[in-house]
Every structure is written in C-alpha cells, then in structure tokens.
Image (cartoon, rainbow, N blue to C red; front, side, top):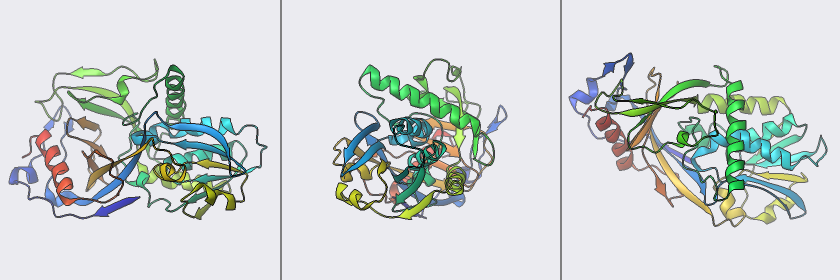
Length: 349
C-alpha cells in the first residue's frame, strides 16, 4: 500500500541550499536538494460517517469492524482497539481471533486483544516496515477523519480520543518512539486539536510571529510525536512476544473469511475494507511525502500548503491531499511542489 521513489527535484536556489533561519531558540529546516532522500506515497482510508466500529455475524463467524480512520489512524488506534475488545467480551479468554490488516490500527487491536486474554493471528498482504503506516509523519491529532453526524457517534469518537491519548502517554520514551512536542499551526490552518474533550490537552497559545518564520502568526499546541518506524517495530515485537502470529494473506471477498480457522475476526483492512465488505463510504485519499535527511528539530508544523514532522530517520514534508486516488504511486512533479511550498513558507526561495 505504499510506494517510494527518489525523484529528481527542481533545482533549489543558492539561498535555499544554505539558508537556515534561527530565532527564539528554534531553527528552520534545511530544505535544499541535497537533503532529499526519497518521495513516498500512501493512501488514507477516509470513511464518510466516521470510523466503523461494529459487530456482525457473517459467514458463520463473529466479525467486528474497525476501519475508516482516515488520517487519524495513529490518533485513534488504541481507543478504537479498546472498543473492539469490548464488543468481544462475550468470547471466552483463550479464543483465537483473526485480525485482518497490519497497519497501526490492526496491530494495536491485536495487542489489546492479547491483553484481554485472546490468542491472535494477524493476516495481511504486507507487514511493517512495508505498510502505509510506516511512512506516515505520525502525530497525535485527529485530522482528515469524519467524527460522526450524531451525538452518539461524536461521544464515541471522543471516548476513542481519550483512551488513545492516555495509552500513548503511558508509552512515552525512546523504546516506543513517542514523545511530547509542540506543534505550530500557522494562521489559516484548521486544526483537529481545536475540538477535543474538555481538559484533554491544554489550550493553545497564540503567537504574533513564529520563532522560526517571523513573518507568520500561529497557534501552538502540545501534542505527541509518534515515530512510526520505531513504534510499529516495537508493537510487532510485543505482539510476537505475547504469542501473536503474522500470516501473509490477501482478502478480496467475504467468502475468503470462511476458510479461516478462527471463530472471531476483526476487520482492520482500512482501504481494503471498502472492496471486501462492499462499503461505499470508503474514500481513498492519497498523500505524497518528501523524506529529507533527519534534522534535530524540536517542533512539528502545519501551514496552509503543507506540514513538517521531524522523525529520527527522516524529516517528513507533506502537502498532498488527492481525494479519490487509490494508487500508492508517487508523482515527481507533486513531490517537487511539496518541497517548493515548504521552502516558500520558510522564505527560503
């Protein structure tokens, strides 16, 4: 579900190659051509109506759905996993459960089920480090997701946020790659952090000027950076240590479920759930990212034409939102545009 290329970027100006703004103790990133590692693409599983957390009987088995998280897969992962486990509480401890999908939602679900006493086998076409979840510039922020149109759905969404936030807080540290960071939201950017359950995060501070781009005003929040490769590798290690099995397999129709030995199935297929379970509410949204050489920046950034997430293995630049595009394929022109948009924001062109 992901693609990576090393495109030939448009030539940066001499200023873009060398300029690095410093102010207020924070510095701007280096965005010159020689910093570029690769361009990658992934597809978000947005679902109209919000994530599907629902139990049904299908093909003689209990099936619980857990998909449609859009761009908030990491943010909702532990919370939606907990709700799924609650829907299986009538199954005896020791029951074998099949989890379909090995992105962040599938792996967190598998781990929570293990903690409830179930045995888990994860079926997927690809596993970390080869999933869309691996390339993400993951931060805790409920973006590009439908929160639901009814009070009950909104209440459920908020519960997932609270559960997930507290679980991530318990994992802060180098082993999981989770740590607190400020995120600067430039003016003109709608933030998923503006509408959270009361008291979950402190309110944002308003800044007349960004410390690394003085011509820009912004709001600054406190959130969590989740280093995707570290987090997923540790999660896979935990799942395996608890007896979980990773089994390569693809699914195309509900009939494929009949051949599974497990009596209960949790569907975390994400985008694939739209085809396998005929859910017309699933909409693919392709996002392309430029990975630069890692830089020791202590903050995250969203601005009107892109965003920046500093991981220890790469500085991730985003700025692509391609609704209806289901191919995880990169386009050199789009990657060059993402890089140029970020340069313009920092005034380095």
